[in-house]
Length: 100
Picture 1 (spheres, one colour):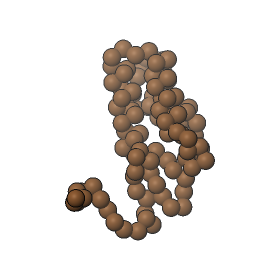
Picture 2 (cartoon, one colour):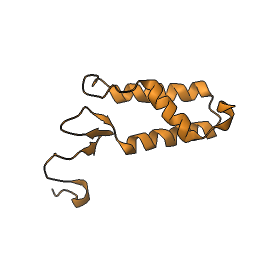
Picture 3 (cartoon, rainbow, N blue to C red):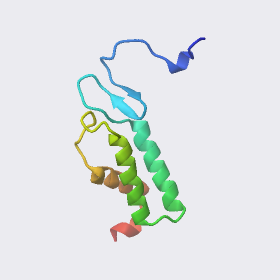
């Protein structure tokens, strides 16, 4: 069995790398990867376009945050709570009627 050349990297972990939605760095706690954050905002945007209420969007972000912690509470950064990611989503959704 051969490994796909684009899906493997063998080397030192001195630099950070993304794995399973987390950014892993040897000297820091886990944090969500840029890809993971991007996918979350894309899905929230889709929900909003389909007519989801603000309450439903907040539930989605709360559940995503639960996934982020997912039994790894002590390993994942706690710099922000679910509110941090909720504000992140709101900024990226560009919903003008919320801020009037």
